[in-house]
Length: 88
Image (cartoon, rainbow, N blue to C red; front, side, top):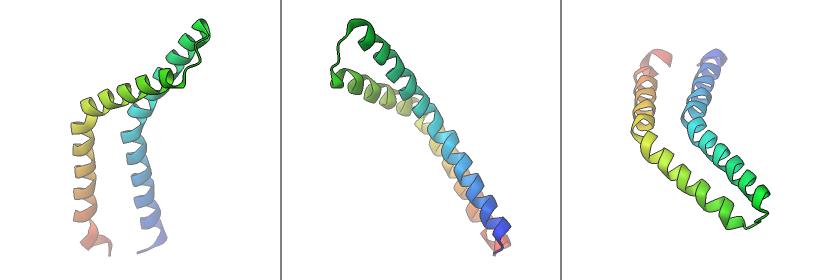
């Protein structure tokens, strides 16, 4: 194995991780901003008010996107494993 192959595999893994995690993180960010604005307007500073909606939104997004995320991960692993004989 040469260094370019290792760096290509690492780059692909990083991009896959970003592609899979970004929708969940963006949903949590948007929820956090909306709850923060609501708390600032009403001056309610309860920590659970910010935490519970984020968890619920993350669970909803994961339940909607999990099948496609698993398919993407399975395709990546199949490509990675299929390429092992040619890369060693």
